[in-house]
Length: 291
Image (tube, rainbow, N blue to C red):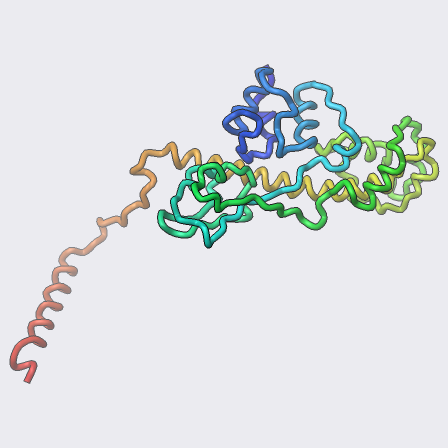
């Protein structure tokens, strides 16, 4: 049996249930048991599919488009303030506690915590929640200048001739970098040196397959930034979900804030202060005091 924890580590932890399971952990267990497919994680895109395939040993070749845009554009939930009735049904539906509110009060979404899972939409009785794209400016897209140049090249395959290595002024391995981007291999390894590429293009003229390597590397640098953001968001989502699970599993008495300790309270001093206050009140309210 495969290790379900190793599979869970590469999932987005959005708990969106688009895979058909009640969260990322059940999906990981199903993968480990061979009951689910590696392409079942919709918000993970081809990035998660390729990572899961490496861990399960299943071949998962990617199209050039999947390699150039391995992550779906992110989105977040928005609550329309003029339509929210404060029913609080979305609070229980959010798997990462990204919604703030109380009964009969306006609810708001914490943008940085929302995973865009969409689970808050179905229980809303007035349809006042919507998912909107929040794609960063540098998120990789299929119609970028680099991607269009790659598409026009016909996506020739690398023949592993090694001619590109000696001409790289940064002493990088363009062949390894190209394969890392082409196969959406963003694990620690060849792609780690991609940031050092200056996009000089000196490797392109010596490539017998006429691969636009500089364009692949430019797109790859944008992908690397997006993957970093995605991994951070997945880590935070897992932390928030785990914290929510622990909170709901705790007995009701443990969820209440602790009461202040009474051991150090000086009851004698408190009684004296009360007596002094009563004496002052009596003095100020007496007929003589009012003359």
